[in-house]
Image 1 (tube, protein in one colour):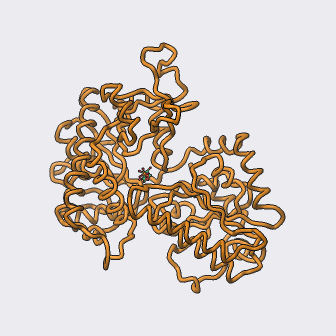
Image 2 (cartoon, rainbow, N blue to C red; image 1 turned 30 degrees about the vertical axis):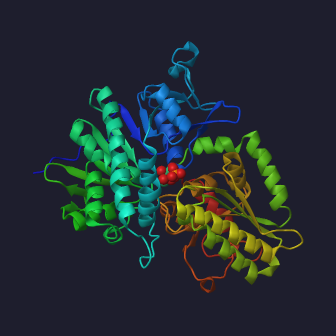
Length: 501
Ligand code: F6P
């Protein structure tokens, strides 16, 4: 008889959080002064609240800038207390005014320094693009992926080496807590960590949460058997492996069954390893609803909202919005092309509708991502040149990260477009439905985790569709949301806004 699954959330255990990107990143400005900024991305948004609410927690993350490395070294490569509000900064242990407990929010950061070449191989060759593209179903197998000697070296000297480095840091932090801790590993960067930590810290409780999709066994068969077996066995070092959706959790179990030959129970959602079981759970991640609502009522957001209304929403004019990292999985180019098709089919919308795209350049050291950003620029220039009318360009592309501006745009937009090819969850959709005040429409890809919760309130987008297959625009006075099947326009977001919790 096998041992029961261990309860994974033990209230009396200190927490060791692990993710590649941390909540704060350090740099030097032009004057040479140290600056600290909040880390980007949904994972950081989701975990910062958790980490700052657990006084014993330590967050193990990569030192990704030279200044991160400097901060780590100044503290002897040990954890550093960092205040998060009102602006992030390192707390001075010698200053009584800087006592962590007196801060409104702080985290203990363990910044892990990784040798540059190993980190490049880990991040720009294996994690992104290889695992990311595979898990988002983005390969056309006739041409990619190419697994050459370069990738094999990167897997050994990059992915495996960096996982080893992080496992060492986690073991140190667990040991410093008496060998008993709840280790919470996050994302595809660290599939190999749990197995190593379990061997050296048998009393640790190990959990893993994946923020991106987990596809079925056939997708993983693209990888050499030795790689996929290492990745799966690494994950099975956890007590619990968790995903955004039940479908991803089931896919994981099917991989354990088909690729490792292990017995799985699809009712109990467990894998049987003989001496213990591993549970596959699903927890759809959400946003901090109160915090986003508070930000939405701030003076800064109100000022941005005024500017956006004047620029884009006067009279009958309408605003389509997207807020994304410039990631090929977000399907940004196809989204612009669909918008151009709408303008071509409905010339009466020219000058009436603007597509505001607030895009954050992402992973520019990965060639696929640099190429994609160039493609975005080219397609926007082409569409704007074709459809400019009396000085009005239909697409306003802004490459910047500005949360207050994004929240203001969520508030005033008529349509939020989320047409991702695949997305573990998509927190932009959740943020927008919570703060929109414009009776707006959520146009949401059916391949996002968020679609399971919000799909009933959205116009569902199949992310790849031939233009001739569906020509009803999602905006405009006589068509779109009001004419689309389902609840009336106000009913969609009115209902959806109550869902994220
Ligand atoms: O959830 C996916 C993820 O990789 C997160 O780990 C991260 O917050 C986000 O995307 C941004 O990615 P990166 O840290 O590579 O810029």
